Image 1: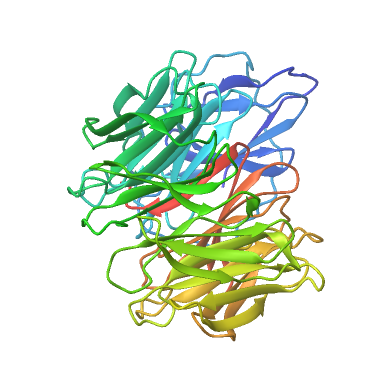
Image 2: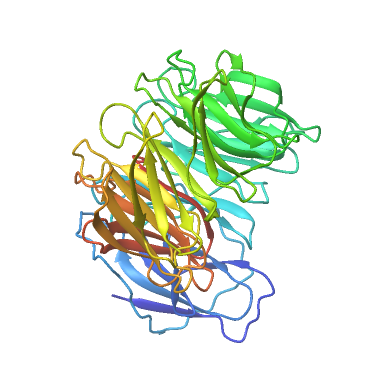
Length: 522
């Protein structure tokens, strides 16, 4: 394996600089190391690569990993080469790079692609990158949202219903709010302005099947200075299928969303959760037929500490609206209503001795067609992390502890059919506040005995990780996709075998990772 070292010696850069390196092997993969740490993987195009040099004085090394793959190979579960500098290459750090070329397809590991959206704080550019099931970058990163100086919102959805996901990018610039569609090959499909140039406060991007036609719609919302929100829904062609220009929600910050059929019309509605200026916790339902009157979940004095969610209590396919909150230092209360505000379930749940941060969600735990409500939190006196499961009548069907007392953050809970046996598993994850190490545990839903467990991002986290489960390599068993900020400031994306606990791949990013997902992109 040929190794190239790029050393910026004795040169202090007061800000990030773009640079080009030439005279390299064409169509090769290069690992980029900064001061000995892997920060990025790039591909040479026309014997050149584009780099971004950070401010300050650093040693930058390139390691030639060989040609881009032309056949499927079995990936190594871990890869931590120690670079050794040779053959210094002199570059001009003030050179202006050519734009990233359109990504060329490569033969990849069989399975889905992993999508990573990130933000370069030095250049103030949003970007995305596509990784295959072995952790190999499919192509150079693609920069999006030109002219948007801050963090954008970038995610994936199947807009046209063909089974392939598109990339949606959304953000506010000095001239307006931009919405872009891209494909997984890095080709810009569409760019347009959206909302209005006045609705640039508290902007949000969501996707769901809003109109009942094949494919998902793109949902955007934003608020103007007068507190009035604007809602727009777009199809795959960029045509607005619904526009509500003046929604008075009575609050200045949206605290959460849920998407389900809550009124029984067979179409998905968008449920918006927030706290009003009168200190009430409300949910507003928005559908193709219009905007419903807000549903009051909690009155004055309640703090929002859990998550707003939807739940199908009776298994009829029509979802109810739920939330968890506490009044001062009292116990937590669970409220579930229908779309008209009629209370379906009201119950005190976690006691007053629990910390403020709790999580709430719903899933069909016992397989009877009706969903149960799952609430978890940390008991402050003992440090025990406890999960409680309640049925449609509010009866507690199971409760158990999870993780250790050092895991103090907001609980990370998700349900997934990991082994495709038509029964759900319950996954909990978090970060140990003392060691910084992440960990996960897996339980059969509704049971108290752990079936799997292991560590996440063992090189140390400075904040709670984000976790999702997906069968990325298409072997019939789901893997864990984990994102987190490491000690030292870099971000990592890791895929783990849930049962064995071993790392399938870990990719390190010098940019701030905003979101990670998986799907068919190429």
